Length: 478
Image: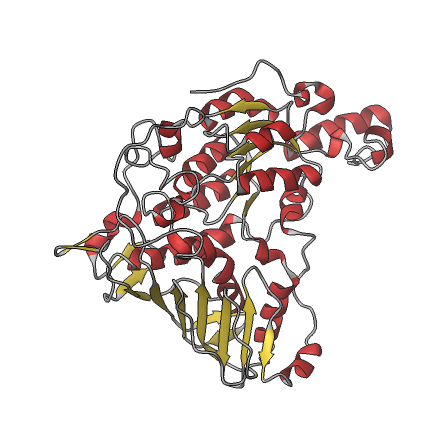
């Protein structure tokens, strides 16, 4: 189950061994007493151990990467540039991960993250997880169970039950967590919050969110592929499937197009909703919706006779969420209706937008009682309508702490310095809202009455079976 190379990572030596927060403080205290009674908990100066422009071993975080091709390779590269040391790398596809493997020749390679965590656990402080959606939760839970800090790409999980379980487990374990919605750390995200909370566009009761990903980067609304092509020699298909039901390998699933398939991905809403819906959820303190309803394209892949096929996500969809009135920062905020569009569908262009201009391909539009505001995905800089509202916005003071950077937050927090802003207590509920919209696509035209605190569909009990999936033997959340 593992593909371990016959070399040991440099980080296995004492000089390169990274310290988790508790071990770091403990060993620093011991060193302080030995060196000088006046030396409190200080990191050894950079010039003593690190060399010019280098991160000294005493400040380095030892990590393992799970899923290190594609986006995962980018995550590994970013954390490496920030000074992290990758002790081990795990990927089920040697070819896809080849570039990352070559860039880290001293890291021990694995195909099965369970084996990796068992063998490398004592050397690790944390794990990055950038697998397809369907293995996020099992990988993250295994890491948390080993006491490791975790960085998990969005969406946090594949199912609603996984999101709640993972959030609670991370809180109980006290590990540092972060989900990969990078826009949460931007200046634009903070301006969006500050301007809305200052009332620049008045009371907000209506929000529109949208993405162009479905159909452009992968296909949706299609039937299962035919034929059984041979499995590439570099791919462990059984491990790629992980916890989900077995099916024959096909390049229509792996390595690129899995997001459009219900068993493996969460569609455009799961992919981009965590980037886009994040901002209105934060700025308006939306909490959990009480109802959600979808409208989807009814194409051949969805209607086989009188039976709806839900193997792939629809070509296009509109999902409407209703959030109740709520208390936030000493204020009573009004109910909000938030609408999601995908597959080429978008809200109408605001009348206030100058002729010839259009909304971004991915973004958010806030409709207030005084005016409107919109921004692009990933925490883009907000733009006010009418434009003369910008003068009022200049007077709004900064009230939200600025971030050193999305990836920087997590590494610093792993060393006990600061905290992450998209930790699982934030990104877990966000993921639940996103996945509730995915659930609604199973019953288009039916309004789901949702009990968020208890993670339960109140009026359509048969839907509750889809809050989670049955894992294959050998896979679990604990």
